[in-house]
Length: 351
Image (cartoon, rainbow, N blue to C red; front, side, top):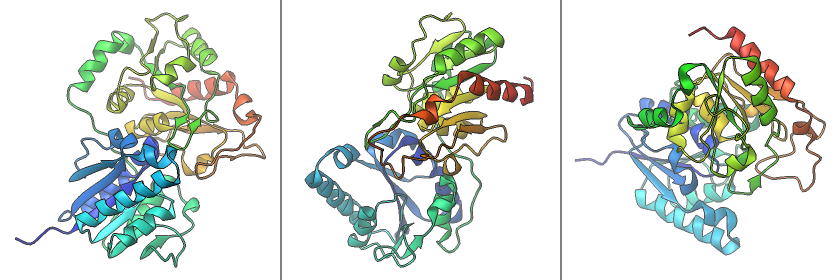
């Protein structure tokens, strides 16, 4: 029996960025159903791809060593991943990462066709997407795959999967919260591997929640990581109206919960992308990053708030400014966000 052609997808970094590769992944599976697809992902973001039927083998590696270790630790990680790639004897690899180290790893592993970000004459890639900043991030991954002859795009729907038991578990945690419309809020920023990113965090959620529960009939669900719970103290609110599940549900659980919500309010981070994947309206709050490459594009009611200060965007390719007055976030008021929330409520179909 002849061996199936093997194609490798490679990604590391942030949860939301990983989820944004899934439209390209799904389209590739449909375009080349006979191939075996192996996805190599940093352990940090494995949860974004668990249960994805478009992947034949999900392989993880220690990305913490790459981002937080020294030069030797990074070299060892690249060398280990190079060996992994070589062992699969793939015919193609898609490097969904803007870092030339991984392009070089793919070449060193002997993969004949190498697709990724870079200049047209990139010495490590056989097919390179240039000017990737001209595209929304979801589209940039699709554009890389379009460099493979025979690839057919399949829309922007992002895929996250959860177990059949997850909705029941969420129901036990939320009680009667969903007897009314529920607005989800995610107070965290983006906890990436390069550094703890406090610059994307907006501090007005407490006042926003107060306005929502006093001026609308909606209940509130707070989602995020365990550390995010410390960012938003909900003890002063009626627990029948406000539930804080930060740190209590996994990525798949957050996705399952968001699918039941009327909308999500979040900054630029993994929760924002989960909301987009769930297909609900998202009010996204941007400051130090450029929304044009990342804003949720899966629901026509979604919108973003960005003051577009002269110094914005100041986070570029994961690099953080040493000093900032954070005016791009501080000057976004709860009233500004609440106005967008109420506009979505008015325009949303009644359930």
